[in-house]
Amino acid sequence: MPANRRRPSAQRGAAVMTNTTSPAPHALPPDTRGPHSRRLGLIAVVVTFGGLLFGYDTGVVNGALDPLTADLGLTPLTEGIVVSNLVFGAAFGAMTGGVLSDRYGRRHNILLLSLVFMLGTVGCVLAPSWQVLALFRFVLGLAVGGASATVPVYLAEIAPAERRGGIVTRNELMIVVGQFSAFVINAIIFSIWGETAWIWRVMLLVALLPAIALFVGMLRLPESPRWLVTRGRDEEALAVLSQIRTTERAQAEIAEVHRLAEEERAAKTAGAVDLRVRWVRLLILIGAGLGICQQFTGINSVMYYGTQLLGDAGFSNNSAIIANTLNGAFSVIGVSVGLSMINKIKRRTMMLGGFTLTTTFHLLVGLSAMLIPEGSTKAWFILVFVVLFVFSMQATIGPLVWLILSEMFPLKIRSLAIGISIFVLWIANALVALGFPPVVKALGISNTFLAFAAFGVLAIAFIATCVPETKDRSLEELEDDFRTRYA
Image 1 (cartoon, rainbow, N blue to C red):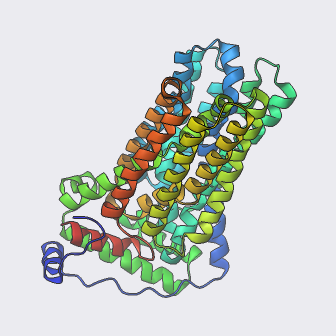
Image 2 (image 1 turned 120 degrees about the vertical axis):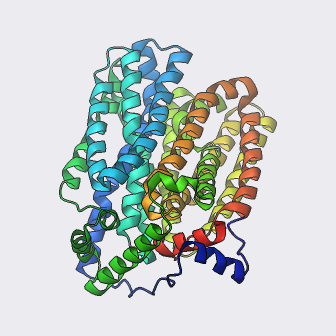
Image 3 (image 1 turned 135 degrees about the horizontal axis):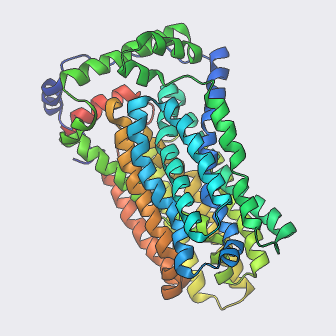
């Protein structure tokens, strides 16, 4: 049943009776400001260093690819392997990261990921051949994928419902800050030492600093209170919530999580067993669909190959690497604008508006490449429309997909379900990463972006008919509602 359509009340009541007859969740006390708010903000800053690393490690290859290719003698095939290996690693990292996060805790998993980030970075920097580099890019991908599955869950579970949108999407802001930082650092390093064969190693080495900061910071942070409750560690969970809520609010939230846990036990739902339940499977399919829709906007074709794309459009090599920094800058601006709107507009409305904008700019890029004669005018038109596409994507679809995935799954399988959804997201990402260069070579910029536009139309239909609204609802309320409407 489409997520935006409700059953008649009699059917909803019958569905509830099949699971539990417990009452609807009580209203929680308001989230008032105080010293606990500053503590919550500090936690969010430290945890989102995982997003910063995600962004830097995926974006750094954009400018490092040319000197890397020259130094290690890459062919087009091995170049594609080196670039996409991180993405394939991320797909498996999302799956294993979700499972480890559920088993050992969100904080424990983020600490482990920070060590994997360090190992992967050092391995890439010291790689003597493209084969070793590809191996450690895969290791880095495990960390990137694990962070993409774990950090949003941790943020969603420590955030009050009223502020969850803004706090979870800080991770998306840090991702694009990481990509923008990679583009700017690459441009600076290339302008100074561009003729040095090993300069790509310095570009990659910079990622070691935020990995160390993430590890040190996480040593002082608490575990997710909701995860602690699922392990029967109620006193620890209340102690954590008391650091980031008022006392009254902390006690009310603990009671709410307990209420849901009792319903889950009554329904015999626990971990992967829930995958046998129809409504859970449907939600996971929707989550996977969201990941596919996000990636087939083609955003990462720009973030991975933006310099080459602008070169194909008509810019010189030096101009292309500088112009590419605009994509990073407008990513940051876009996410900042999205953060200011995300708690004011319904998720589905904002998502539909985002896909409408990105599809429009896909059409404009395709038509510009098709109709404008070769020359600087054509290059500038393509640059402007690509930058506007990046801005629209990062202001809407980019943060919203991660936010909705962090909100829509049942507590006990939240990380597992997000891991499955993000595995599909990363596989779609990998297909774009592998396919974009040969597709552009075979079809040209015009037909490639027109194909993205066609997929955008399909995505709009999917969002309109299948994706649920999650704004201003507690994680526990959402589970109750999903169980009812999809039963």
